[in-house]
Amino acid sequence: MVLRPIRTRRQLAALLEEEEETLVVVFFGARWCSNCARVKPFLRTKSEQLRDVIFVEVDVDESEELARVAGITCMPTFHFYRCQEKVAEFSGTKREKLDHLIAQLK
Image (cartoon, rainbow, N blue to C red):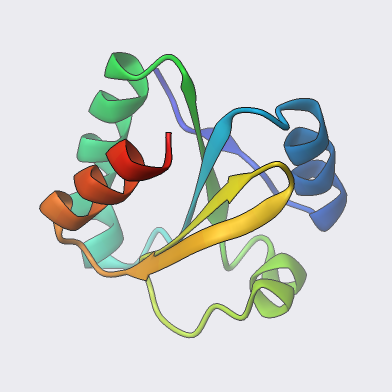
């Protein structure tokens, strides 16, 4: 499964409202970011394994306003949402940490 692309605050807000009871993992990255490229296959695999979690991707170069509003200062950064509220945040590529957060929050 491909990560769902999100480009605007409006798209993200609509998704969070629509999927209110579902854990939504938002991956903020960029094409030129080597760490982002390293973690993407892991996220694709997780999205195939965990059908009860929604994985989306925000390219910070294409979505500068969304990245700014979200307070993104490094990449990759992950925001975790449930019931339209951000419940956790993580920056980095440690797959064990991502696995733990997803399991804990879903």
